[in-house]
Length: 312
Image (tube, rainbow, N blue to C red; front, side, top):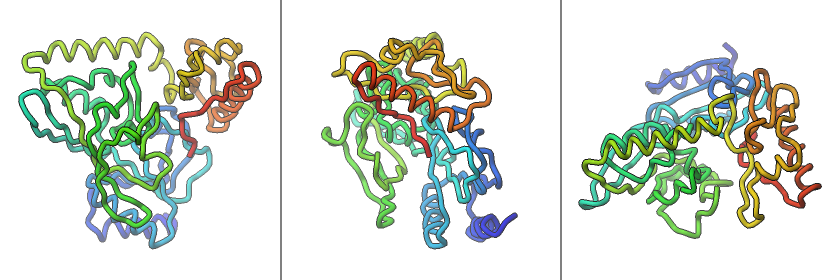
């Protein structure tokens, strides 16, 4: 145990925080890409308040930190991270509040998995989240990216969120405003906001649990048929620009890039907008493939691809 690890471990112990603390943790275990080096400290708090106090401790002691969700849209670095990686996955309570006979509010803590959210809605006969069945990651990550599945964005359900502003360490509420959202764009991107919880509005469909569950199965089946779960990946690599007239996967395919391999990373032969880990991919392999696709499509199609995956 080095000095940083001892300092942080002593802080967690003396604070009486619950949660899971591990040292020299492989980040590849916490990424759907299965890529990443080691982080000196990996911490999973179970209360948002503990996360806030942990971040304050890191700030006051000049300790570098990442805050992540489910790692479904992230490419971790290959090198060792000399700092603290904090995941929200242990902060995952879900509650509901009925508005009227037709509408229900569902509040999810940021580490709630999308699968748990969809299952909660299904169990409570709530409709509106079916398109997100099978989507990996957490509520916080989905909101950050404004996740879009089968022509539906998570912002269409969003009502409000509670977040920590790292600039002044204050807790704030952010209500829905149309101008804040766009295709794969949210007010949480490029900001210092750490989402604590989010509230969504769903439709009450009494007696229709079976139909909601069947709809979820259909969307999961669509993901399976498109190869979403064949290999470790982060799903779509680039944001589609509908005004250009063709999705990114089609542009990449027309440029002859499907199946292109660099190291252990490959532009999926079954989907031009997927990069997959064929077994031993590194972050550099993925980044090199991204750059190759960006440069080739720009040269041949005159279109600039915009990555949606995040290289930490």
